[in-house]
Image: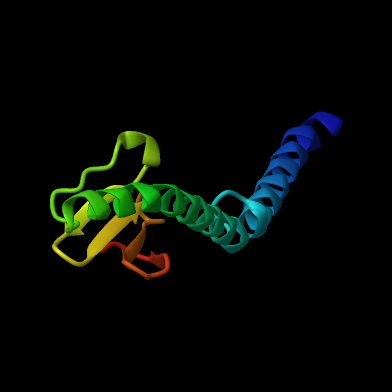
Length: 114
């Protein structure tokens, strides 16, 4: 009798364990809302730091050339110049889906691409 109940009880225990694991993964797993929000905040903070580091280089370019047109930033800044003209620019940092941009001069980091 014990042999006939052993396998079904083992299967039931595995099914219950699997169900509990999937339910917990929804609230604390790598795709949960809390983890996704924390990753977005970390990416936003990293982008803001990258923008702050790149701004002196942009201002130096503007002081030398009288325009932002043609500015290129080294890869060390982790910032891409998407648009630059005589009086304004748009910088982009991060990787999808956590992309941030900075329209300037005088702007603040905003979520999303330029």
